[in-house]
Amino acid sequence: MTNSQDIFKLLQGWDTFRELSDTILMDIARLSEVTTFLPGDIVVTQGGKVDSLYILAEGNLLVLVDGQAVNSVNQAGDLIGEIAWFTGNPASATVKAISQSTAVRLIFNRMQSLSDSAKSAIDNSMQIHLPHIFIKRLIQTNDKAKQVEATFEKLRATEEKLRLANEDLGYQLQSKMAAYRTAASQALSIINKGLDNKINYQSYFCNEYISFDSFKNYRSELQEINVQLSALLEPIVKAEQKISSHYEVVTSGLNPKILGALKSVTSSLNIELSTSDLRCHDCTRGIVIIGDDCTFDEISALANTGYPMLFFTLGHHSSPLQGQINHFISSSTENRNNLIKTITVAINKLLFNANWGLDKYLSWGSPVYEIPISSSDARTHKIMESISHFKSMGIRSSILDRIQLVLEELLMNAIFDAPTDESGNHYYNHLARQQLVTLPENKPIKIHLSSDGLIAGLSVIDMFGSLTPEIILKYLDGVRKGQDLSQENKGGAGKGLYMIVANSDLTVFNITPNRQTEVICLFDLNKKPVDPEDEKNIILNFHFYYG
Image (tube, one colour):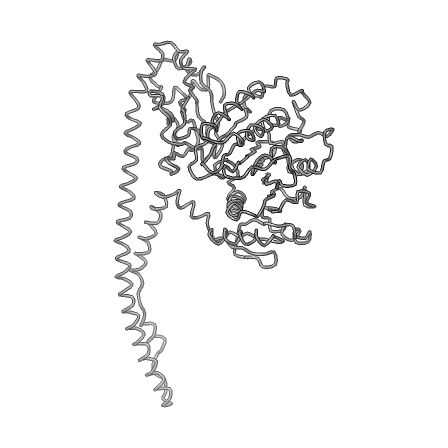
């Protein structure tokens, strides 16, 4: 679904555009484009500029206000950005993809090239249908509120029935136990006297039972209510289902500080923490976290769990495990809060498959600003736009200098080194860095920027996924040891990779092989700066998640 004819057919089928003439629809289609959002991608950001109207073709989007989910967009033809179409106001909510979603994008600036009559016809059609859209949303909200209120009222009534039934049950149990004790005493008296037992004890006792039929009815009502509540409060239920004692974290060879922080995290998440020789056999899913003191025999045994394996080291980048483990954390243990946050994010990534996104490393609800780039000649302009964005937040110049250096290296790698064919052959990394490179239309680079006042973060995403753990570890360790690696096929690394990690307080590599690479760089706004040239004082804090 990439050409104008496909977009034209979609527009014809949507109520908002159905009354427009085919000529106007085709003009709109030629100026529009189809955009695909992966899970976690931001469509619009609350408070941010809206430059396009999006019409959902398929998928599921979540609407958040101040970080809280308030609605969903999941019907073909649903609009995002319709208010900005008329007013130009910033977005009143953040819209984020929760499944792979496709939308037709009407870019406001492009639509200005339409004739005045066409623009007027579009405005009239939008004005006719907007009230219907708002009324529909209001009805949905009111209906949902009424359903929740009615369901909770029914729950309270059923709980009262259950309370009264329990009181009655207690009375019945006391009466029957007294009857049983009397019958047992009589039977024992008969036996002790040596008389023939003429009593059919089985019949006697089987007639003394308590009927629970009424409680079955109450149980059915409660089950029905639980189903209704699950449907109405699905996001909360799903979140609670993740935090389950059926998950476990298996450890071996960890530093005591890391193990202590891990105990705090797993306890708060209600996740079993076990060792290689004392496993939780009731658990069905989990991860393995190993440290510098883990032996190869233990690794082989833990590999049989089938769980994802994470190597957590204290800066020993040249580990003998290099090439065998796809998930790696090199981190300092000086700051316990940072260590706990690192472990929490790692567990969410590996246990719940929540791999992507800059937002995971910042405070909840921090807005993310996106800048697309598709050619090397736009690099300088995009870097200046990014610096200007951070500068407007009051970030000091020493950190802005580091951000500029890091972003320059990230974009050089994403443009020249990352693009590869299906066999892994690089398209552009043999070219001089001054030569013009234009990326394929369907594989643009995305820059994401955000800050929560404590941390400034940026990420660069390419759509090739050619970076590997071997390259990352090899070049970080090699450059630090002073090895000459300039003649090797770096495939997305080199000394620039070391400069990225050394100038960031934390660097995270999220890689889906042959599909996508996301490099996240975080900057502590309150940390005392360290001179990158003073290598002895630098601890390279970086994570990578591969696969």
